[in-house]
Image (spheres, rainbow, N blue to C red):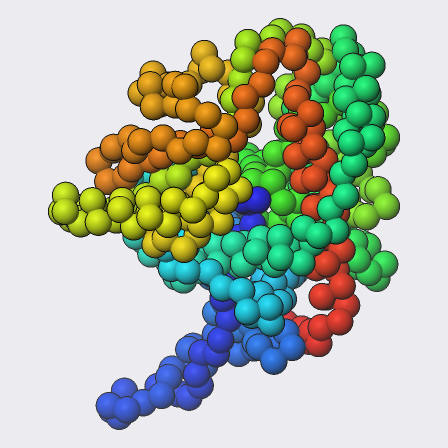
Length: 426
C-alpha cells in the first residue's frame, strides 16, 4: 500500500513578538500566528504550520493553483488527513511498532524513482518550493506505520477460503468475453452522517480541479482513503465492485471520470483508464511471481563498505525460505527495501535478471545484480503455466485478501476516530 497517502507531522511553533534589539527574542508576531493550534488529537496537537506545509504539499503534488479559494475548499480534507495520520501513528506507538530511518529513506527513493527524479533530489526540490521536507518524511512514516498496524492487528482476521477463490474464479470464467475495466479510484469515506454534505462538496471540488488540469493520481494520493498507490484498483469485472459503480463504468469511455457516486461506505470517484474483454489477448505464456530485495548505498560508499552491507543483508536473509520470510527479514537491514511483482511473463523479464533466476526454485534467492549505488537480489515466489488469460488461484487469493484488508483497515481507522478526542480550532 504503498502508497499511496501523504500527511504531515505536528508540534508547536512558539509564541512571542519580535524584538529586533533583543538578541534573545522568542518569535515574531507572524511566527506566533503559525504556532497556533489547528487541531488537538488526543494528547497531540496539529499546528497551523503543519497544516500550511501539508496544504503546500497538496497543491504542489496535485498541480492545483495556490489561491485563497482553492485553499479554503481543500483545507477541511487536508486537515482530516493530518488527523488520520496522527491517529495512525498513535496506534502504532501503542502497539510498539516503529518505522526506521532506512525505511523512510527507501520511501523517498521510491518516490524519486516513480517520478524519474535523480536520487536525493526530492527533498531539495521541496525546500525550493517552500515545503518543509519533514512533511514528506512524516507522510511516509505514517503510511509505513499504518501498514505495520493493519498487518499486525488484522492479518489473523483474513479469511479467504478455497470455496471463495473457486467462486471468484468461476465468476471470471463466466465473464470471459465480457467487458472488464482498468480503474483508478478516489474514495472519500462518510463515517458520520453530519459530514455528508462536506464530503460530497469535496468530491465535487476535486472533479472541478481535474477539469482544470489536476492529475487524478496526485489527487488520489492526497485525498483518497483507498490504499492503492495513486488510487489504482487494477482490472475489475462484473461482481468485483458495487453494482452502481460497475454500471457507471459500463457506460464510460477510457479517460472519463465519474461524478462522486454514493455507496454504503462513502463517495467514489472513478477514472476509467482502459477497457477490454475478459481474457482477451492475455495468453502470455508462463509467468512468475518475483520479490526484489534492493540494498541502497550512499554514492560515496567504498567497495569495501558496499560489500559489508551486502554481507549483512545476506546473513539476515539466510534464515529465510520464502518470499514472506525475506520481506520480514529485510526490514531489519538498514537501507534494504523490498517490492513484489505478480504474474510477470517470462518473456518480459530483463535478460540480466533472467540469467540470475534461471533454474532458481520457488523460495530460492538469486545472486546480486549490481548497479551504480544499489544491489538487487531476486526470489521466486511462484511459477504459473499459461492460464488462457485468467489469473492464477494465488493471484485471485491475494487480490481478495487485499480487498478484505482494505475494508478492515477502513473500519479500524473509523473506530479510532470515533474513540479519539479530536478538537478542531480552525
